[in-house]
Length: 293
Image (cartoon, rainbow, N blue to C red; front, side, top):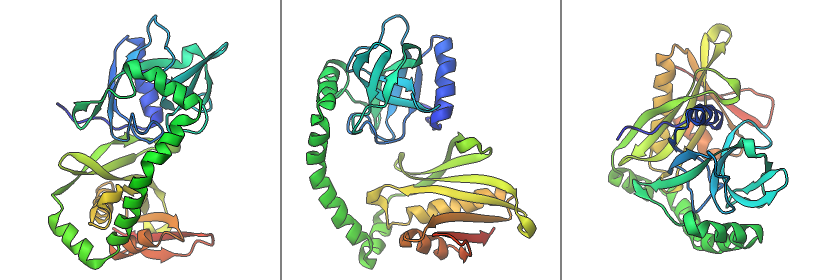
């Protein structure tokens, strides 16, 4: 089996439209939490063209978002004279009415860790849609999340302790950092996403965008979107991602790299300072950190 292709929403939309024109199915990795817990971040879905059978209430479909140009994978929760009402299972309100022509495909398979996921699709789909329309699904999700939130709070506190960090780094399996594919967020060319994996499962990601000439520094690369799954924080995964992004920026010809973080994100500031970044004046509530490569 080949590696999955990670694409931005806009890129997935263009690719899916090309597959629909050829009446072919698309198997791709999805990102986001709007369909939790039935479709999760990192799951692999198979999208089949709608063809002649219209979507039914309860089905999970791939649509062009009614308020944007991106592809979203949400559930049909109702019918409207103008089309279909779609909503993410973890969203408080519907996306809006999607015209029939903007419903591009239906999800016929969901895989997680190489195994099929059936809950929330098939015969159970209409029940999930009914719970979603009545607001009950959100209540159930909130109740299920309470124990997890408590565990996250405890884990987050432990991650700040030196003994936890040292022990975790010794016990953590090998972390592999690899390029996940090219993206073009907000029209920027030359953007790449790099993913950290443990035993093949994605545990973190970072984006590298090569910018234009920047004064005497030469060409500059920007880092953004650094994210590490909660259970792997404090174990050096973020540092591995940042170092890999710096090396990639150097390979692409950048003379320096920079990142913008919130002034209140102390952990992110400390992480970047640890690998040689220095704060630069900005004049706003943000913190700009830079370093030569």
